[in-house]
Amino acid sequence: MHILPPLSFEYTALEPHIDARTMEIHYTKHHQAYVDKLNAALEKHADLQSLSVEALLGKLSSLPEEIKMAVRNHGGGHANHSLFWSILGVGTTEAQAPTLVAALTKTFGSMDVFKQKFAEAAGGQFGSGWAWLVQKIDGTLAVNSTPNQDSPLLQADKPIIGLDVWEHAYYLKYQNKRPDYIQAFWQVLDWAKVEACYAAVVQ
Ligand code: MN
Image (cartoon, rainbow, N blue to C red; front, side):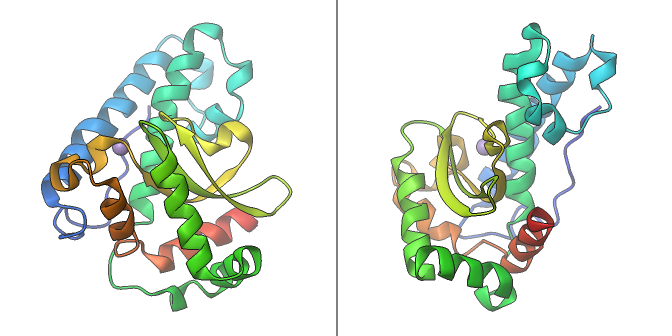
């Protein structure tokens, strides 16, 4: 049984960058719906119920046909949002992610270039989707985007930073101004948590 992971912060914690109303609806309605629909899809597949959502996404092609799309969409939604909440918070700086910052600087030339490429991926994703910093299977870092709730795990990419660019993530506060929301993201990215996420990925 998959469950909504507890948040480590209050709905108001990310104000004014992400407003409390958006945070509450996003977490209790949108994310909960992905969890519920994933559980419903697995109801008749007892053998798959003990697998983590990451494990399910990693073996999507070998899952029964009748649940593939549900796991891709709702399992992806569950995994993507769980990562997203886990890297949000305020009050940290890049200095708290020394290993990741060094790797990003080596890969992209500077943090500014990394952030620019990430913002381009987030802004350029047509319609709903996500922007990502991932570690590729060869160990290199890359910025990309996925449509809908497709998880990077479908491509064997390990997600380190994810930004939800579905309108439900920002519309109440930002309306059509997705670029403003993308810039605000840097104010609520918890670098200490991202460093921990990177450490777990490179293990
Ligand atoms: Mn979302």
